[in-house]
Structures are given as C-alpha cells and as structure tokens.
Image 1: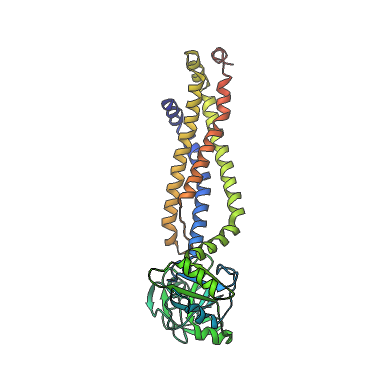
Image 2: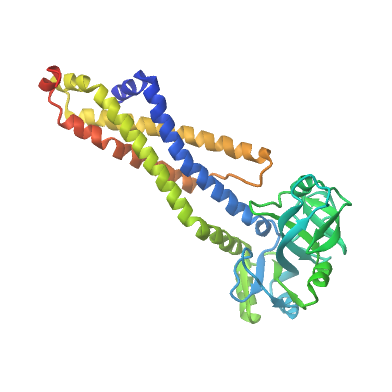
Length: 375
C-alpha cells in the first residue's frame, strides 16, 4: 500500500511539486496568520508581562489597558497600600499619544506610542531593560525604545516631543515596541503638568509580599477598597490578549477557510489525476486479485503523504519567517504555538481524507475487462 503510494507520487516529479507545493502554500497561509496573531498578542502584553507588578488595580470594570480608560483618585493609592499582603504600590498615568522626533529626522518623525507617567520611586511599571541612559525619567526627561529612536534619527540628549511638550531623550529601552506602536516613559510630574493637575492616576501597580498569593491579595483589595478592579498580572494580560482575539476572529476564520479550500482543491485534483493516469495499473491489480480496500488505502496513503510533506514544508517556511522578520526592521513578531500546530495538522488530515474520496469512488467502479479494452 505505502510502496504503491510512494511510487505513484514520486514517479512524476512535476505532479509531486504541484501537489506538495500547493498544499504547503495553503497550510502556510493558516500557520503564518496564526503565528502573526500570536506574535501581536504577545507584543500587546509586553508592558504588562514585564512590568514587575503582581497586580494591576484599575477603575471598577476596567480589566485591560488597550482601548480602555481608567481613572482613580490619588487617595486610592494609600488605601491600596494599606491592604494586608501588599509590599509596594506604584501609581502610573497612561494615555495613547505620539512621539514627535526632530524636524531633521530622516523618516518617521511621528511615532504612535503608549505614554506611561512614572513616579521617581517606582518599584514596578518602568522599562524592564535599558540599552542606554537612565531607567527612571526625571523631570523634563523621556525614555523611548531604541528601535524608535533609530528610525527617528535621534540619540541621547536630543529633544523630542511627547504630549506636545519638548523633553530630553535620557534613556533608550529594549523590546518596548508593538505592531501598533511603542511604549514611552516620562515622569509623572511632567505628565500631570502637561495634562493638567487632576489628582488622579490611571492604574496602581502592586507588588505583593513574599509568600502571598496575587489572586488572594487582589480579592482583598476589591473587598476593602471601593470602586476598583484588581487583577493579577496573568489575568490582566489574558484580558488584554482577548481584546486582540475578539477583533481578529472573523479575519482568522475567513483566511483559514480560504487556506482549507485551496488545499482541498489542489489535493483533490492531484490525487484524482494521479489515479486517472494509472487507471490501467489499478485495473491490472484488480484482475490479479487485489482487493478494492487495498487500493483505497493506497490512494488515501498517497494523499496523506502529500499533505504530510506539505505540512512539514509549510512549518519549515513559517519557522524561517519567524526567525527572519526581526532582522527586517519591522515591528512584527511571528510566534508559533502548539494549539495552532494541532489545528492546522488536523486540517491537513481532513484535506487528505476529503481529497481521496473522488479517486476512491473512481476505483470502486473500475472494471478490469473494460480497462483492458481501452474503455
């Protein structure tokens, strides 16, 4: 069975390339799209994941940062600090704005960014890795991602505009870019002054005492402090990713359906033509006593081999793309996850099974006597 399937596949190299290549491209569409979305989701939660906070405290009902607004009175900071199990708190201000580079920048003078206002004694919420310069911005200073600085043609000591205010670039962070923008840091005092003293904060970042459970401390905060939502970092990041998932579900479904239809059409046509080209051989095998079930399995094996090789090729190309994209200077990351591999692998098996149905039906009605007569 397998020997016959291999011979049928590899005897005609052109047909093999068309078969495997077509399936590989169809599955690559699904794999690469999943990898892009997984990369975007991880980028979206970069700040949350690397913030150093165990709990995010926000206005009641707010459970994420992206496309959300949170407003908390400054008095809430002390109340949260007083909850048992809390080691430290860091109030931050947060808004979406742009980084405006110098007028003589070579390109991309405007960069979309999430602006974080940090207090001078911040124990969480600052840039996790600094390439150059300071780690906490002082008054009149700003920290932006190194990639953004390079694209904008600015270096440490240059003037940039954030929130419409001219600030000195004092630090360059690492890995603080996302598909939609980047993350920049300024002092909380500058943020308050530029936006107007409101006596409010956006989020309170909490670090818990050693041995305490973030989930349990978050529950205490919600019970003891009115009108707040407290989420452990993992739960807060999950809600952030869910926003991206909800926005992209329809796109993913449509693209996966397109990949499925392309793969099915290519495989069905290839297996059918391969079976038709060897119609006499199958007739001889039937005349010699080969059971139809054995021939069915040979056709199915041929489809499975083609799809298996196509899947492996699509995975290899996706891995190459995921390793190459970071060097292309684009703020995009491809991340392959196990769930995607299982889903696309299952899709491959379905394609193989469906594409073999028509050739199997053809063999089932094959009459050796008619084949020998050339009919």
